Length: 342
Image (cartoon, rainbow, N blue to C red; front, side, top):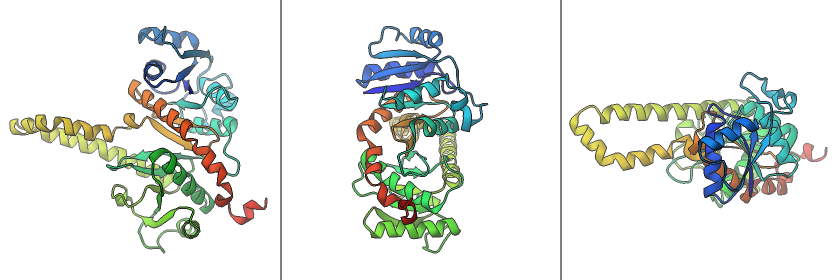
């Protein structure tokens, strides 16, 4: 396995990316390619004691995609950037997956431009796994497509189901549509039209569509995949992240409020740490760009060494699971009749 890392992407690059890469090379039995400004990357390797680490290669890329660059054209305009070089290496078969903590928009556009979508897929989607105490829930899309059509929603559902099968170990994924209510007739034109397509696919035996779901049901375990447009999905994801941070701040305040509470905190310390880890984005590592022909993982912009390590681990799992192959093999089920004729 050979994972390509955008060494210059993210708030803590290149040091955190390099440190995470060194750990991954040592613990995950995989080759790592660090793409970035060679002098800075090698300096970071020296700082973390990884200069002589076997299975690490450095590929020079003189430029960097920044958050100020226009996302849609960043990789195209900056052909020498670490992100672009990494994606072109993946396209050319020089690695099995790419990991980047850089600009989400630029990575999505670059992956679409250079690595390409799976033939027949209209739009790639971001699919983070939200922990719910069991296997988690795949939320798709969470921001790649602010404007969606019923056809996009149908394809997101299929792609999410295949991802849940191959990556989350769910044999028969249950798919729900995010809506303002659970009744079949709820929502606007997009949700109503999407509902009809999802139900038809379910009736044909492609996956189990369990109907509409409200946001409050995310942690109930009623479904494995929650499909929605990118705008609603992104709002929901950020709300969940914010609520988790608020809850732990409040809990910390309660636990240190008095001597008896502090004693209780010591007793519960291990369990609380486990709960916090379950909700920590660094433990997941990143979000897959589902629908791209080869695995591309978007790590959080503030990723530290641990988050990068986990993103690499996720990339290895994605490459081994070959979700793209499952999507490609079933593409005829994912297109409307009028699209199949084109």
